[in-house]
Length: 339
Ligand code: DAH
Image (cartoon, rainbow, N blue to C red):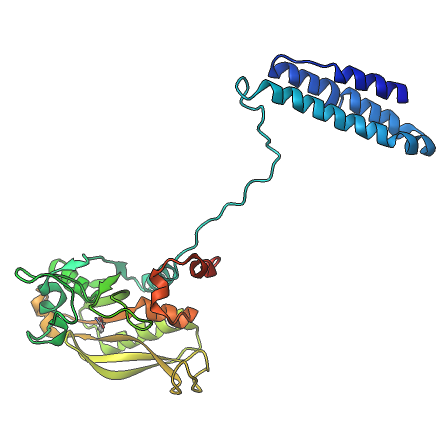
């Protein structure tokens, strides 16, 4: 047996090949399952234990030698005459770093999905707007402070070109050219002239919802709000409405949800109140319907608007707004696997 091994070894040592096909032939002859090296292993397996102990190493060395020899014949040919040469299909793939979805996208998609289940469709409008759609049509008085350069980024004064300060502008755009029933949800980026800090940013994101039809009442709004809050924050979530003021809704309210961190008992997150504010809402002011060409005697509607960062803060406890736009992968990677 030892002789056989040595004979095979010198035979293999003398092998030459001039192209890839020959290398492959040799590989099959010596190293395939039915090749000469495998035949030797078959014989080896039949040997008594003491001979096995003696011959184990030479047999294995022969196999390694043959493998090296075939590989070096293949390497010596270079890669040019056969694409498969040098390509190791058995190698583990390099780990691929896939990106993660941005937390704001995750929240936006979740909000949209909830409203879609209620039959709302997505509507979008431009970020660069005019005074009419952002303010005038929405019943903002001529001297309303939001119209001040201090609060709004103006691109041009006459004619007015500005960056929208809220997604409510999409309401008026849609109402202008759509007959009710209207049931829309408007996600988008908005801009305000604010110094950037942990709690304020010069751009952020909102989602607006609008429902206009015959006989839409405050009860419809309430039910929609409750459904949204419980879908978004869990079935135990309670809501409460506080009277508020917005130029485009009458009556107006702000909605709080029970603080899910302390279960409503009061903690530092909810400043001891047990409630956290999440959105503004109300019944569309008849002036707004009329300004947009919808007969306010025939139709009523409700609207609501929320900040996506605010919801993300509640869900993911991200309390520095700047993190959302710095694109720091250490932050973004924390949302791997979030859905
Ligand atoms: N546009 C308001 C804002 O930016 C949010 C808002 C409040 C939207 C009440 C509405 C609403 O549609 O009814 O603060």
